[in-house]
Structures are given as C-alpha cells and as structure tokens.
Length: 77
Image 1: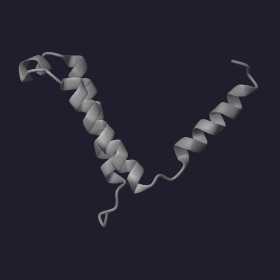
Image 2 (image 1 turned 120 degrees about the vertical axis):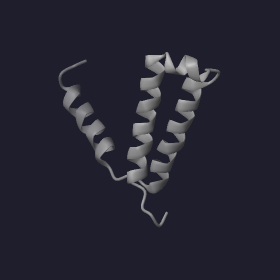
Image 3 (image 1 turned 180 degrees about the horizontal axis):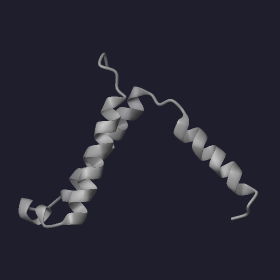
C-alpha cells in the first residue's frame, strides 16, 4: 500500500469507529452475536463443546460483544 494512502485510510477507519451509534445498531450487534454463537455450536453436543477450546473462546468472545452492546442501550429502550 502506498504510504500516502495510509493516513487517509486510518482517518476514515477512525471516523467510522468513533461515530455515535444508534440503539438499533447496538441491538443488531446483539442479534449478530447470538447468531454467531449459535452457528459456532450448531450440531455440537455439550461434551464436544467442552472439549473444543477454539469454540469455547469464540462463543465467549460473542458473549463479550453482547455484553458490551447491552451497556450502550438505554433502559427506556
């Protein structure tokens, strides 16, 4: 990548990451996290899940995302 593009790309990414998000976007994150965790564990028995560190970590990450998203939704919603 050309050096002159890096600052512009960085600025664009930061602008997107730092923009305020609506409660609907946070709810979408929650729904996507639930769906991802479901896909990761689809067809697995509890014993298989417990023996699969990668899946455990992937599901735990989705739970972290879910928890973070819920922190941004106002109680009145």
